Every structure is written in structure tokens, then in C-alpha cells.
Length: 409
Image 1 (spheres, rainbow, N blue to C red):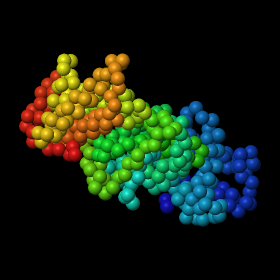
Image 2: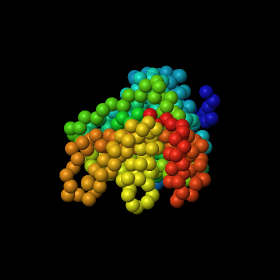
Image 3: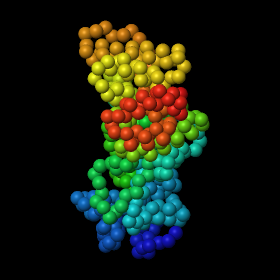
Image 4: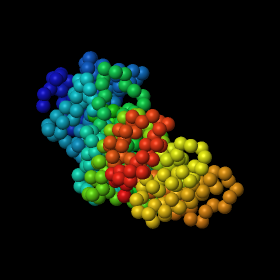
């Protein structure tokens, strides 16, 4: 290990050895501890990092947290309080990196609920983003102990979505979650739902923000984020389990990479369908699910304001199916879905007896529609170059060709 500050290294070493050997009384208010804090506050790198971390914080209090957290992290690594040179060097190296590096690697993660995975290794979907067991993500594992979501207590989640983002210490530390990280995590969740269609949910977003003491003294941020957070509020609904296996893992990687590769003008075509598709999972009542799904399908398949149900059913059926009978069945079901939506929206009409079935049809047709568009990068590039008002004509071209490559099954 290369030591950048011998004086700082010696001070922390003496501090930890004193704690381990009980030769000194350590802790706030103790003379030895206060003297140690005095020495830390004389180090320019410490003061600079405190000011970057929280300009409004009382410097001595923050330095005190770091000193105490150092011993907590050391003890956590050993699960006991005894001197170990190698473990000390590992903890100290992380701390020096936090002080002296101009760019920190922050970890953002969100727990996955109703999720099981048969794979033993993390799934890397792209550079710095993937799905892994929470215990394998450094600085995040201490945060995933227990969560309370939607009025229910959910015990720790084994798996999480993670994203690594570089943070420059030359810029002011932001008070909000990194938009790039949240977009990546949202794209992973969307991809999971597109690949299988089974219910899967994410919890609170957590970030260690590059701190080596995440989850120990509060050096992390947690935040509920948008409509993707948590589970539908219910104390009695039993949710199915999403199981990710070997074959689906490869599909997931492909779908995520295609979704995340879309530039903004491409994604405009799928933004409403994808966001409403995700929102449909968050509703407890089928009426709300169906409304979101129909809004998504309207956005994808129709732009006119006349005969919406007929045009939606016609385009959807012919885009997804080539077999005559399947096409006819899809057309009838999508028309039933849209009629049910109209009955719900306009009120006063009897709810269809098969509403559960219609929601399932709508969600599956929408899922396959988005997947099919993502399956052909050439089509997506054409969409990018096609004026918005002419995009439905392009979709009609794909329907008439009838030979667009498809991952929609």
C-alpha cells in the first residue's frame, strides 16, 4: 500500500491500536480523542474534503464522525476488536482514497423485491451497471438490512440493481441523486419487466456517494424515487415471484443495452409507452392498471382522435401477429380492452367480469410491442429520422412488410 500521508497514517494506527488494546479511553470528550481530532483538523486534505462533503457542517463534528466510523468499519471487517495490520491497511487505504482522489466512484443501488435469481454471479448489463447480491456490493451491504414499503415491513432483499457513477470533487456535491444513475436503474427495471412480464419491484434508492463509511455514520443518501418506488400499498395482496434464469439473463442484457443506447429523440417514441407500462405495475386496482396500459398503447399505435379503439386494435394486431387466427384473436381482445377502458373512464357502466384477463392481455400486448420495436436497431434509427407526425406511417410500413425481426415472444 502506498501511503500518501505518513503523519495521518500513524495517527489512525495509534488510534485503532489504542482502541484494540484498551490502553486509552477513546471517544468524544476524552482528552486523547480530542487531541487526535486536533491533529486531523490540521490536515488540509481532511478540511477540504469536509467542506466538499457538507459545506454547512460543523467541521469538528464531521471529523469526529469519520474518526469513530473508521474504528466501526475496522471492527465490522473483523467481527471482533483485535489488532490486524492487513485489515487496518485496507480500511486506511479506502479513507486516503476518499481524501485525496479528485474523482470518487459512487455506488447507487436499489433492492429488488419479489425477485429470485438462479445465477450465482452478478449480471453485468453494461459497464458499471447490473444486478448482484447486495452483500457483494461494497459499501451498500450495510444499508440493506430492513425496509418498510407501502405500509408493510419487508425484510432485507438479497438482490439489488446497482450502478457506479464517477463524482468529481472539483464540483459542488449535489443534494439530489445523480440523474444518470437513476436512469440506469430505471432502465434495468424496465428491461426486467419487458423480458418476462412478471411482477418485480424496486425499493428505495441508496448511494454511498463515494464515502468509505456508508451506512455507518450516515455517509449515504436514501430517497424514494418517482413512480417506480416500492410496492402497491396493501397488507393482504400476495405478489408472485420473478425468477431470473440463465436464458433470460442473456435476453435481459440485450434488451437493456438496446434500451439504454437509445438517444433522446429515439426514446421519445417509447417514453410514454415504457413509463405507463411501468406505472401499471404500481396500481393495486385493475381499473387503474388498464387506464395506464391503454394510454401507453394509444401513444404507440394511434395519433388520430377518431375511431381510436378500432385503429389501436387493427395496428396492434397486425404489428404483433402474422398468423391469421392469432391476428383475429388479438384484434378482438385489444378492442375488448379498449372498450373496458372507455367504460371505466366514462363511468356509470358495469365493470367487465373478465377485467383481470383484459389487464393481462393489455400488459402482454404492450410488452411485446415495445420489445419488437427494440428488437430491430435499424427500425429505431429510422424512427429517429422520421418526423413525429409521420411515425405512424412508418409503423404502418412495418405492418405491411410483415417481416420485421422480432423478440416480442
